[in-house]
Structures are given as C-alpha cells and as structure tokens.
Amino acid sequence: MRFQIRRAIRNLYCGLSLEDGKEYDLRIKGKVLKVENTFNPIAVGDIAIGNRYSQSEALIDSLEERKSSFTRWNSKAEVNQTISANQDLTVIVVSYDSPPFRPRFLDRAISCSFNSKIIVIANKCDLKRDNETDSYLDLYDSLGFSVIRASVMNNTGLDQIKDAIQNNISCFVGQSGVGKSSIINALMGTSQRVGDISQKYNRGKHTTNY
Image (cartoon, rainbow, N blue to C red):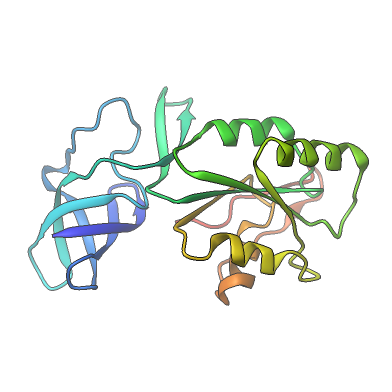
C-alpha cells in the first residue's frame, strides 16, 4: 500500500492510504529505515510503501523518491532534517513586527527549499510599517519570489493567499510568532493553537506541532 504521511512526531506517523482513503497509524518496519545523512527518515508529505496489519495500523518498508522538500540543518545532530516533502509550494511567512522582520531568516528559508515554488507572506502589515522592510520585500518580489502583504486582524491579503495555494500542496514555514497558525485558521476555519508574543524579547514561542 502507498501512504501519504500526514503527521510525523518522533517515530510515530499518521498516513493517508492512497488506495482506500483511510488514515492509518504507521511505524517503520524493524524501526530502521535506511536514509543516509538525515536526522529524520520520514517527513510530512513523504509517500511511504508498506503493508497493513490491522484495520488501523501498518508497517512502512520504504519511501518513494522525494520530488521536493524543505530541509534545514540540525546543528545538534549535525545532519540535515527534512521538515516537509513533495510540496508544490513553499510558503515562507515573515512578519513586519512582533517578531520583527529578519531578512537573514528569509534568505535561509529560501535556501532550504528544494524544487518547489516559493511565495513569501509578509504578515501583520497592520502593525508597524517601515520603508526599510518594504524595500527588502520589494527586492525579493523583483527576484521572482511573489510577496503577499497580509493581516489576519483586518483580513488583508487572505484572498491572494487562497488563490496562490489553490490546487497546490503547500508547506508553511516561518519563525515562531509570525502567524502561520493564525493564517491557516483564517483560510481553513480550523482552530490550531496560537501563542502570545514574548513582551521581553518580542518574539514568539513554539506552539503548533505537526
């Protein structure tokens, strides 16, 4: 059977069967899957091959080759860590403020995306706006990375985001606190947890885990 990985936390996975349309709890057969030079052998979006052994459980034998990925360096383990696989679109979310815009993060995120189209969402445009940040964003736009200025608070840019991600498998990435979960909640009517911004450091705290 072929499964699309929908959730990956440690060695526990949830996958949608591409044959019967049901979700299964998945484990790696023998707890070892040979994928060289990577922190995690399986990521969300991977297509896994395996066999069902109950009505809701299956064992993974192998993975299909990834068409695209978002992969970052895990400094503790000193190997690459794949965050998502087989996405059509990588959506990099930054914010104007709370936390402040960091062009170096945006550069790193762009370099971590392989073989997928990239768009940038500049969230919280209802907060402090400055010419320097707008100039940076205009530069990225001119380089071909489509930039959407958005605000969940006043419903700005959400229709543009909907149009951009329509019919695409999309991976949302960004620093804690920039508003990834808030944007997804607004687009999909879901209720993922959202976190407050640290008043001391003006940055977010990790909240959502998928």
